[in-house]
Each structure stands twice: as structure tokens, then as C-alpha cells.
Length: 69
View 1 (tube, rainbow, N blue to C red):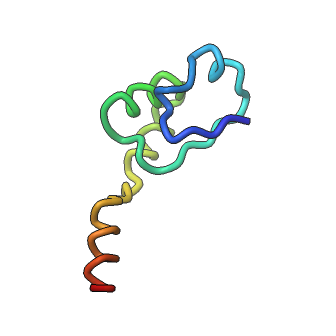
View 2 (cartoon, one colour):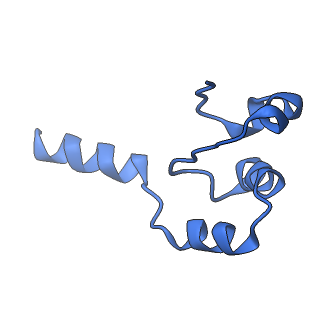
């Protein structure tokens, strides 16, 4: 099992050996999206992933700070 905050940091040789992969939020832009495309053979699955609302950590932190200020 491999857990990483960045899909693009995992060597492609490792991801090629995995039979099951789970992806969380936050891979919708930049090099992370490119890595996701490389690791996903089903274009319908990728399109479905892109429909999920991506969490915006900065907004969450700002709301938290303003709530407790």
C-alpha cells in the first residue's frame, strides 16, 4: 500500500504494479491531473472524478479562523 499527498511524486514503476488505486480530492489541476490521466485507463471514470467538487483548503481555513476570531 502506498499513501501520498501527491500522485506525481510516486514513481510510475510503482503505480504500474498496483492492481487497485483509490484517489482522493485535489488532483484536478496541473501535474496531479496529468498523473491521474496517466494512471486512469477509463476516460469515463476520469470525467466522473472531474465532476466531484474539489475541496478548497484555503477557504476552509479562512472560515475556521473567522469563526473563532
